[in-house]
Every structure is written in C-alpha cells, then in structure tokens.
Length: 207
Image (cartoon, rainbow, N blue to C red; front, side, top):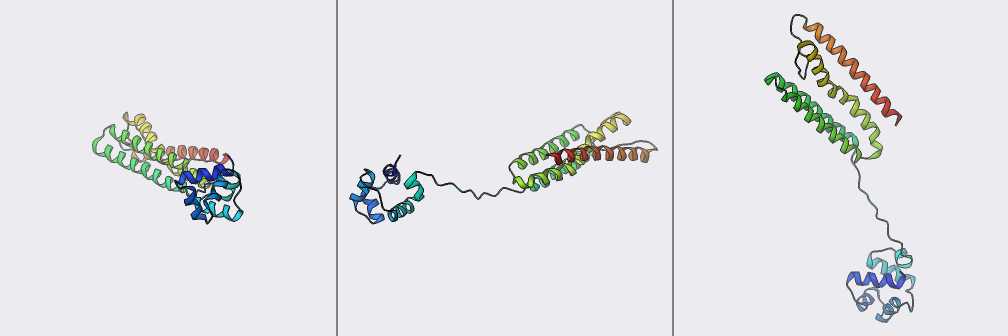
C-alpha cells in the first residue's frame, strides 16, 4: 500500500468525497484526485494537515507505520489482594470455630474450607493481574500471615482426633490436664507454622 492508497482508504473510511476532503484541507478537488491516482504527492504541510484531520501520524501517511497505542492503565498493588485474601481466611477461621462451638457439626470444617479456598483464590487471581513490581512483597506478606491461619484448623483437627477421638476446628482438651494439652498444642502449632513459613519464604526469596 502506497501514499495514494492510504489517503484514499482514510477518506473512504471517514465517508467523505474527494471534494469534501479538499475543502477540509484547503486544496482543490483535482489535487486530491491526483494524490489518490499517484500523479503527485502532497506537500509536507498538507501531509501534516491530512494526518491531523484523520487522526493518524505523518509516518502512517508517508510510510504506513501505525501509531502505537499508549496504555496508561495502572494495575492494582498486589498487597491489596493480600488484605482481602487474608480477611477471607480469618473470617473463615472465626465462623468455623463459632459454628462448631454452637452445633458440633462437620459443617464447621466445610465452612472453613470454603472461606479459605476463596481467600487463596482471590489472592492468586489478584496476584497475577496486579502491578508486577509489587508481587514479590505481596507473596511474602500473604504467606507470612496466612500459613498460620491455614494451618490452624488442620492441626487442630488432627490434634483433637488423636487426643479426643473426634475432629474440631480448634483444640478441645477434656479433663484435669487442660493446660498441659493446650500447651502441647500451642508449641506444636507454633513449631509447625514457623517451619512452613520459613520454608515458604526461603523458596520465595530464591525466585
């Protein structure tokens, strides 16, 4: 495609005649006709006027180089999704414990799983659509907090099954040695969570 073709295509795309284009840029209809039939080329000042009229660059008129589309879309900070995802996980933990306290039903564990799944999904989807420079810190922040929230219910469940024979989303230690059981739970939970947190942060730091 040459200069003549580009001028003609732009004119037809705008739905105007050669005479209308000539009036808009201050030349005769014959001049426009000669440009489009390759009998002559427009002067540089007319090229500038044509480019402004059709909202294209002079490079497009002369060389066919398309104007680059500039995008100013600003992506969100990934840490926003850390906050939202963490809030879901925390709410899931609280609601699960409350439901178990009132009902002692397995639904409490299902509720926790649903909330935590949504919390992690929100963070994951938001992470990949966020500002790239904020992702590394967001990943560290999310796992530094949420490993503790996510690990609490599974650890409580296993602890309760071992010591009481039934699962619950928080530690339940019957009998006179409550404080010993709770101390054991607390130490085990802290050691496990710290180990997983440090391991995860170490992996993140290598990326």
